[in-house]
Amino acid sequence: MNADPTAAQATRRLRKLASISAFSIVPASIPAALMALTGERAGRCITYGENCGSNPGWLYQGSLLLAGLAWLTVLVVPRKAVNRSALGVQLAAEGAFLMAVVTTYA
Image (cartoon, rainbow, N blue to C red; front, top):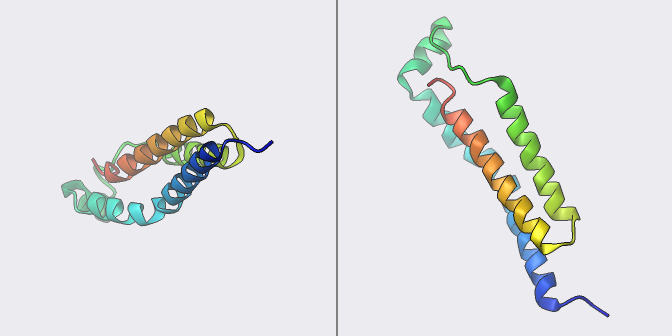
């Protein structure tokens, strides 16, 4: 009648990890932004608008959108294999966002 208890526990664990990862992107962005601001080109870009980074704006928005969709997939879809894959996509998208923030003024 009920699903396997270990499968239900694994699904809950994946959902918990995905939620922790989703909510920790904002606190993780703060040190990433500080790292970007300590670069040698950051002062010149902020002051004079010269030598600013070449990251396109869609990179930031797209990676956050992809991470959000993957997070929702983990929360909604009941299959463990799909949840694992979606969690991997979520972590990769969040990593891409943080790398884009760090390399803003590169």
